[in-house]
Image (cartoon, rainbow, N blue to C red; front, top):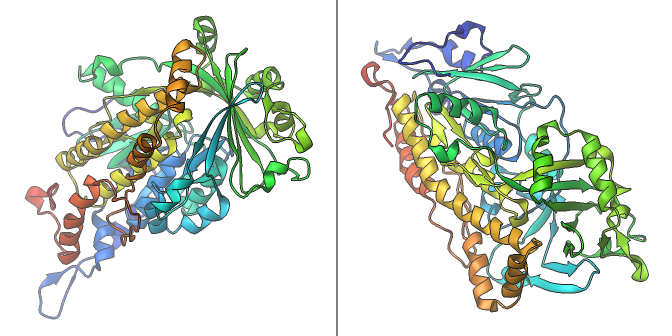
Length: 522
């Protein structure tokens, strides 16, 4: 619950855990120079450390860690609170390429990303008896973009991000139980009775975001929550995901292919569609999407994914073992069971595929990111890239804040939503199209028939719309974009560059005591 007016949080700030940089900012004294005039002996970096807002990030997933790495590069003090007590390498594969290339180069992680990834050129679709249905050829993209499209396992991408951030900035076992905010600060209390005080709280804690739930509860009490946001998360599928250990190319010859073998198999006699992806590490990332009818949806609704244990994944795994997959040696028919048997139980999980884009993305000093505000079906392969793009947009605006008051915080949150909400809606619709392409009903058959007959030039135009989104961080040296297709206009980049230039030219411009919250107007 928010504290009204400008009163301080009910828990004393002295009991809160300090954020990195907080002590430094208060220990640097002002001095008097030889002319007798007071001055601040701060470099630009020291002034930034003094005046930049302190940020808490709830959630250490792909989106949360990307934001953390960006804030680290921007010298904005932050702390990540992750509910898991230990790092678990869960998830299947992620397709990334041109849309993240400039940003990953700026962050210094692109080479490692490429090292751990495998190029993909085609996506194959089969019937459940492995009769070919359709092949989507992506090789033409190499002629128009200064990048390749890659497949990387989610655990590998997570590992790259996690190891790029100072370990002391990420606290595990920190499940958020409550949050309190006023005009100046926001405080969270965790399940281990620790409390943390900051000026901004980012909810990057997934589809069942605790931060979103507390924010929405407060907004509902104040009658500021739209009815469209006061809903349970809708879902039509559950998903079993896993990744094998390293496979022997002699037994699985498709491991020898230079490009990732991406296969989608459409179940005809079952309510499932399954996908496989080969990786650089000679593993297979696999995923089974189980489409739910009304009865099975009710049964699954009683167990949200946060409550599912390993036994739930193992039960579904037993049901799908017989599903055929391509890639056998000398014409041998492989099944998912061949992959499941080589998948350790801790690398397999059952998740619910919620699908929603919320309208409310922020309130007071709290803002949402990634699945916490837009949850997409993974069939469109747009969930991770959307969270990454959220992070760079939000970081660009956060990098401009100096001693920011409530109006300035609200202004940058509005800018963030204005840029990202329309994109999230469009990506959501695209993901819906892909899941219909994999579905079990007459509409799905119609969609598949239409997609097979789409002229190549129309398909190229559709794909090009998504590779034009190539955002960059405004506070880092910009990467030269040699792609023959111009990048989409990035509002947060072009609007924050002049603000950052002004701050660089006048590093001692801090707010006066009468207007301490607005040294830079947005």
